[in-house]
Amino acid sequence: MIELADRFGRVATDLRVSLTDRCNLRCTYCMPEEGLAWLPREEQLTDDELGRLIRIGVSILGITEVRFTGGEPLLRRGLIGIIQASAALSPRPRLMLTTNGIGLERMAAPLREAGLDRINVSLDTLDPERFQALTRRDRHADVLRGLAAAAEAGLTPVKINTVLMRGINDDEAPELLRFALAHGYQLRFIEQMPLDAQHRWDRHTMVTGEEILAALAPFDLQPDSVSRGTAPAETWLVPGHVDAAGEPARVGVIASVTRPFCGDCDRTRLTADGQIRNCLFATEESDLRKLLRTGATDDEIAAGWQIAMRGKRAGHGIDDPSFLQPARPMSAIGG
Image: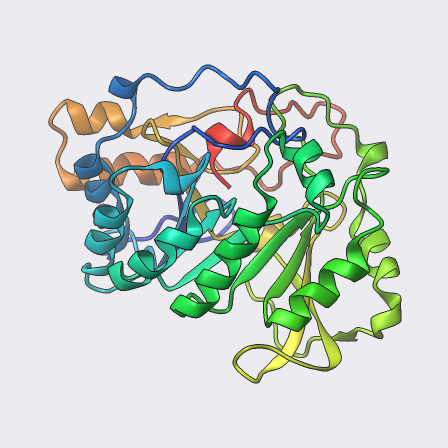
C-alpha cells in the first residue's frame, strides 16, 4: 500500500467521487436558472472506469472513505451497481453519499442494500415557498420524505447540510436545529463558498460560522469533547437532546472560509469526467481519464494520482488577494 501524500505531510484517505454534473434543482447560489452546459456523455467516465479508479484508490493508495457526490448523484443510472462494486472491495471502504434528496424516498432502501453506509441531504429551509424560490423547483415535500426514508432504511446518522444566506434564510437557524433534533437528524451549517457558476459570491453577504453560533445561543451549546480529527465540521453538543442512536445530539458548523481546516485536509476529488482535483478550490486538474483510455496499468494510474496530490497547496487561499475562483462550479466539481 502506498500513500497519497502531499508536500506538507497530509495524506489523502477520503475520496470524493462526482458521478455527474447534472442536477434536478437550480439553486440560486449554485447555478443559473437556465442551467449549464452538461458534460458530453463520451467525456464522462463509464461505470467500469469509475469502479476501476475507486478500486485503485482503495487497494493501492489507501483510500478508506468514498463519498459519492454530483451534481445530483441519484441521477446516475448505474449508481446501485457502483456502490455494490465499491462495497465489495477489500479492505472495504466506508461509503457515503451527498444528495439534494429528490428521489431519495424511492432510493434509500436500495442504496442501503447495495452497501451505502450513510447519507447527507441538503436542505436550506423549512418553508416550502422559500425552498421553491431558492431552488426554482417545487420539491420541498420530496426532500422531507427522502430524509424520513433514509432514516427508516438505516442510513444513519442522517445529516442535513444547510447553507445560510443573508436576508434569505439566515433567520431559520434555530428552527432548522429544532427540526433536526425532533427527527434525530444531525444538522451541519456550511458557510457559503465561492463555487457558484455565476461567480457572484461576496464574502460580505456570507453568513459566518460565528454568526451561526450566535443565532444558536438559546440552545446553550457545549463544546464537543470528541476530536473532529480530519472532519470538516466543528461540532457542539445540544444539552438535553439525544440523536436517533441515543448518543448526545450534536450540531456542526463547517466554516471553510472563516475557520479554514486546510492543515488537516485528507481529501482527494475525482470529477465525473475523470479529473483529479487535489483541492476543492484548485485551479488545475490532472487527467486520469486519458490514462484509463490509453491502456495505462493500475500502477501507472496510481503513480499519476500521486503526482497530482503532491502539487496540493498549503491552503485554499480565499483570503489572499490573488485568489481565483475555480472555473468549474460546485455542481461540476462535486461536494
